Length: 305
Ligand SMILES: NC(=O)c1ccc[n+]([C@@H]2O[C@H](COP(=O)([O-])OP(=O)(O)OC[C@H]3O[C@@H](n4cnc5c(N)ncnc54)[C@H](OP(=O)(O)O)[C@@H]3O)[C@@H](O)[C@H]2O)c1
Image (tube, rainbow, N blue to C red):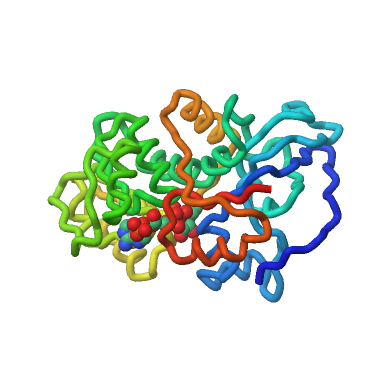
């Protein structure tokens, strides 16, 4: 259960930054961790009580103080990125190592907009790199309207791909405006895809039809699955990878400061725009979790602090 509490302000250690948080995001990942879904995450993040009691991974704020060994940042720097798997960004202050997935916020960008970039951006980049995306390829983004989907559409366009976005009727226009060349409305019935068409199919929400997608791949196409796969799909994926040149790829992303430097550069070039569904304040995080859990947000739900 989420509760608002007064806690002591953290003190930065030698290699840490103390960040005064100005905005964060409620992400689908945090919702799954809180539930937990799958239950097995309890083994890593606390069986009887949360190992990290303050949730939140997305950072957008101002460096308040730095530890004695910090060289890359100074007090007053505006930074955005990810606190990683030690969490703690649903708070007014958080300490993170200076080597964390961080960059300075692009000039003129608001903290709210900055908080809408890291989660979707780093995940989309990791998976598109796994798919070895190349200019001129045909890429489908299944679930093109969420945090990862809206980033993936824009990143795939940046890499020079021809992009097809799959989303519901209300999001078709938004996904087109983000750069998708074609859009498919999944609410119009089973999505039928022409065989042998796509170099990459990136499913951000775990809703794509497995066999249809495998058939829709080109001979050496990649089917990228962001959401953990059911055991049957893992077995089917291994079978596909063993019996053809197609690959089914899942996994948990890793992220570095290089990802944030890359995303920052795209924001500065106007190639990556934040998509914000709604904003709320710290006290409203429980309601924000309930909303995100419905699985229909557009882009990001941002928290201002
Ligand atoms: N593997 C990893 O390391 C990793 C890293 C980060 C996140 N994740 C996981 O990635 C998942 C997605 O995260 P997210 O933040 O992008 O999710 P999200 O923003 O909550 O996704 C919501 C979007 O999904 C769309 N959607 C729902 N049902 C759909 C369907 N049947 N077909 C197509 N689109 C559909 C919704 O559009 P409509 O409203 O139009 O339906 C909505 O825009 C989460 O489960 C998260 O835990 C995994």
